[in-house]
Image (cartoon, rainbow, N blue to C red):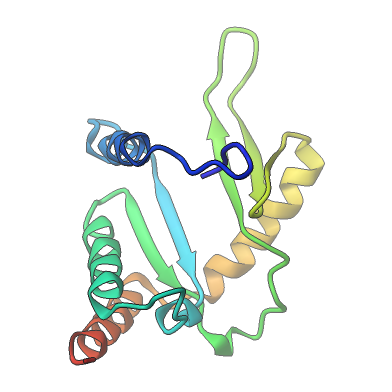
Length: 157
């Protein structure tokens, strides 16, 4: 979440925002969402690692993956793809009377986010996305890996 430098966001605002975003998946016509993770996120211990927090996060991903419009996928280390230059999102902007539907990309880091609206630039992200998506474990294999890691975390002290 991006905010003013040096200022912590109001926790109630953060929680409210997350709940509102989650409701989007409960709509009659929810967006199609595909999330791809490196297997490293399963064992990357951040800050004051607590197994209970890690367990909650893994179970949350598994619950989200139950939505028919959501895919949670793992890109294996053996994919053979070069390193990804960073996180990115591709989304379709609905059309308006003056503008047809079109894809846009979004990149971000810990300091800022940037919209990528130019069609030729977005095309580069779409090609990259297809390479990544095609190299992922399928949905069932990804969930099996998540479940395996969940059991490992459950048995940590």
